[in-house]
Image (cartoon, rainbow, N blue to C red; front, top):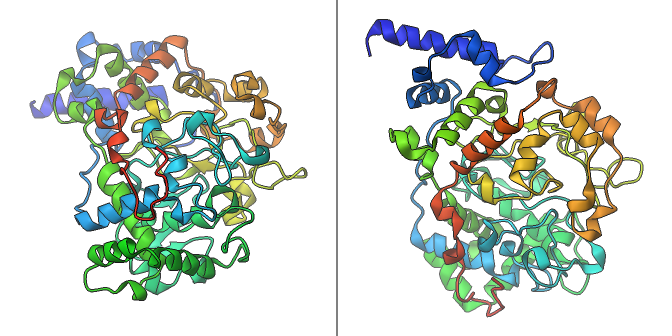
Length: 462
């Protein structure tokens, strides 16, 4: 391409970005998103809507190929795999990390709200104990080493080299954080094991008598359990050469689970990745059109970077279902990021969902209140109306009566980026097609990740 043609091409891309309103600046007024009409205003020829244009738009929006996973020593991967699937980490030996993050459901469980300790069965058929659900949807586990915030509210946050903000505060000691090799995801497994509804249980084991804020004693009790299994002692010492098991703390277990996730669930061979690498035919015409729309509309303001997440927090007007997080006058609301920061401006904000493999990781939203990808993309079109007219009839029966009327508060905090957004049915279909192009074929069948057995001898349950 000559210098003159490069300048002309850049001017075309710049004109598209300005006219379609995907500037990083907050819009000052409503913007009806009809890309075909907007593109007509710059008189683009058919040849402009090419792979070259889409790649340039992606580059300008900071959306590139995902890096390869870092090398993780095999012994650490195998220790992490065992711990991920072993119910020994739950209070009553009845649930593992993988119960809510199943390979068969693309590291989710196919449910709006997960069912943890005391539940019976697996996946969508799992029965909650006494109707008790975990308040939030089980998020997928892909590409976590790329993010600084873990969980929907970001309560585990990497704030500097080996510096973390977590619910454990000073109980997560420097001696623990020095163990972490993979950033925020190394700290993430420290916390589900301490939550009563998730893994610790309500009664019936030595962990439930420990105070809810005494993380140190809970972690020590879990290491004592693991130390009673000779095979685990050997695996830990093989995974951390030169370190005796008796000198280890639970951070070593958490880091091993993270090593397994990073090694096996960093997937970067989707059609989109092949397209970015230069294969023009990696996307279908509809996917290419969806990509162009995604990159020139407001979508790519928040869904940016290699993971398609700005790793920040936004209120996108999702209906609140389930037991909530103990917020609001009836204690059934979920104030999201505000529960971490204490800042009222963070009320109802949740972390931007990474979009890689999003096609297969539903239900969607912090509480899984939207079941299909089509409906979740369509939700962004007049999201205020969608919230006000939310129909819970598609939910499982136990959740249909739990919709909370917090619409006024949610809309008062709704991200202004959504003001005036209207998507045509064809545009929604094109965006869905593009989202499918973000799925790595390896993510479609992850059953190979489950071990046949775990050192404790407890059922793997996959």
